[in-house]
Amino acid sequence: MKKLTHNYAAALMLIGVVAGIGLTAGTTASAMSKSQKTRLASYAKLDQKTTKTSQKIDREFDKVGIRNLTKLTRHNMSSRVVQPFEPDVFTIGNKLTVGNQNRTHGVTLGKHSVVVGNINTWGVANVKTTTLSKKNQKKVFRTIGSKWQSAVSMTKLSQAAQTAFLTKHTSKTAFAYGAYSNLPDLYQKNAQSYFDQDKNNNGFVTVTADNYLNYYHNYATKAGTPNYTKISQSIKIKKFTRGKSVYTYYLAKPLKGFGTKKVNIAGKKMYQLKMSLGHVFQAYDNTNGDAGTFRITVNVGSKQFYANLGNIAEAYAYSLQGSQDGQSAFDEQKAKTYIQGLQ
Image 1 (cartoon, rainbow, N blue to C red):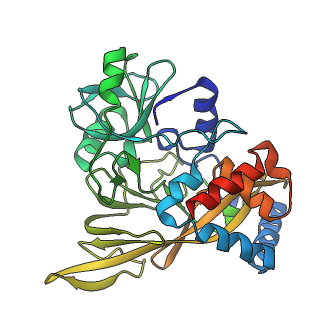
Image 2 (cartoon, rainbow, N blue to C red):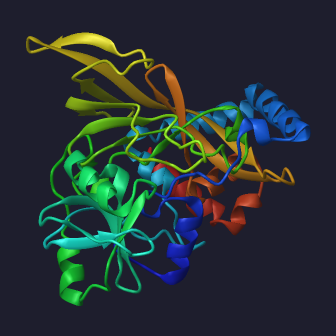
């Protein structure tokens, strides 16, 4: 992303997409009330009932394909005009000193480091820590602390420094297609995913700048603080195929529990993992039960994850339900035109 307006940045922070802010504002299963558990069970039962409408929604979004998933999850600040889809991956042109949100300690990322990030309207750079290369992650977390999924520049950047930061990435890898991420963070689908605020420190999958597939699970401390150095599995991606409907990763080792398949590629043993889009479902407000966020399932091998749909995709999902509730998020007719244009 390039420069963001104050309101745009604030909105993105709320939905957890600026610099990879995680969905950690929920609760644990043990802390839920009996009524909440009953509501979750009813939401799951309702969702599992296949209808012509649910099939139509799934079919429409499936035609978009995983290659355009980041365009489904984008948040468009205008509710009437589709804004340009901005790059979010940069090969920074100068060294950059970043710190945590308190800016108490700084660490320098070297020139040509690859980052996912943006510059806000105050001229401050935001960098997503969990997609940095392993080398940069180690350096950053050691200095700023391991609980931060984003880092910020220690000072406001000059115009020249901003231009250097926004040097578009050009390589096409498992991590990024040029200056665009191939994937948003994918959060593990579970019983609490029918609440807008999913469970604390939910598991997720991401790909790093040096092409490692990282799976985070049980990465929080006993006190509930996330520790992003605690990666359950981190496996090198040796080869990647970016299909429209299916992403295929060829890994150096099996990703345990994901049903990876051993294959031979040019005489070399690798482990195949496929990703594709699945069922679209709706979450509900944790407190009052109002209909809320639409989410799209992403099949990661034999496990299910999800990503939140952005406001354009959400408006189209509502229109497919025959509802006008999406109009407040984005013009439903224009949303239809945009989403069908991705198919």
